[in-house]
Amino acid sequence: MPYLGQPVRRVEDARHLRGAAAFVDDLSIPGTVHVAILRSPHAHAWIRSVDGSAARHAQGVIAVVTGDDTRAIRDLPPPHPLPPDARVPYQPVLARDRVRFVGEPVATVVADTPARARDAVDLIRVQYEPLPSVTDIEAALLPDAPRLHDESPDNVCYRMSQSKDEWYRGGSRAESLESAFRRAATLVRVDFRVNRMAPVPLEPRGLVASFDRSRSELTLWAATQMAFSLRTDLVHVLGLPEHRVRVITPDVGGGFGGKIPLMREEVLVAWLAISLGVPVKWISTRMEDLVSTNHGRGLVYHAEAAADGEGHLLGLRVRILHTPGAYVQNHGLLLPIRAASYAAGPYRVPAVSTEIVSVFTNTSTTGPLRATGRPENAMMTERVMDEIAAALGLDAVEDPDLLHPDAEPVRRDLRPHGLVPLPVG
Image (cartoon, rainbow, N blue to C red; front, side, top):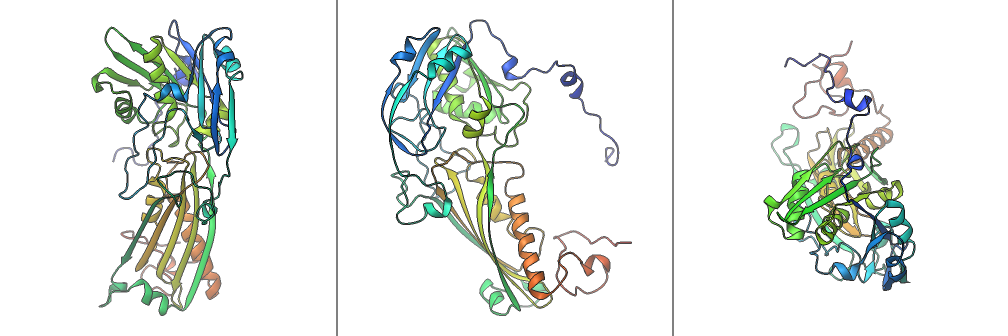
């Protein structure tokens, strides 16, 4: 391993420091028109009418598009990976009959300048009929909670349970979760919430699409982390042959997972370029990015643990509540699945049981964000170990195993699988 312990020089810094980087918004194609999007101010409401007549007559406006104009566009494809038995409602490019979260796109304006497009959006008049909304995960599970989708009368998108019973400490019998809790010296319970987080990359999302009608070829420049899967999804939605769609990723000013999935704007901008026959550009504002780009985290944990008198974990039971938001984006169910897989963290736990309940709420969509599932579970397992230490009057940090690698464990086994403790001092 020639790089181990050696400094590695970065190769991309020079052009960034010289201002020679090329981001999506730096791309300038002659004849480009610009897109602005009208978004819902309501978390939940019927759309009774959309009047874009005043916007159509505004200076520089080329087109005004509402949900009814996009009925011919296929809905966004189902997410992948998609667990069995998951309820996944269709997600239109523009909301048609109902909005289900603040920031959901309702209409769009195409104009010759970004400023004129934004001004014209303010002229669109939408008549909403507000509906009761629910933004809390646990509240969405109550019998009287507002329902978001006909496909999910109880608001549940996905449930999964799994358990792991291993041979206990090399002994001759298998340790079940029930027996672990029965014979434990102490039982602890931890309930907490991991709040939502927005990715907030330095560069918000941005798109430029161009369609060559003579060749029937679509080119999309996108600030995306997944160029190839974006192309595959566009092929599915737009019905173009795969060899006629090209996605180019220039410099990307951060993503952190928020720029992984296919979003409505990619489909909308590509479809507008095909329909209008001119290059189309959309650059998200910071506020748009906060409400429309996938959020991360946002889990509720209920964890119960059993430990013996020396602090060894005997069993762990975890219930994870999650919301994909109002819809399920690509990789939108990855977070709870990975969180359940990492439930034991670095600790040896003979018996583990996890349950996932993913629930629709009137919130923007969620997805991967910076080591999806790892930080959430680290918080859970360390909270559990702190509670066990407090209950038994032990030091939560001191580890005799690490101080004396040849000694018998006297409290709890902190050693991750396959790792040898390092001597201290």
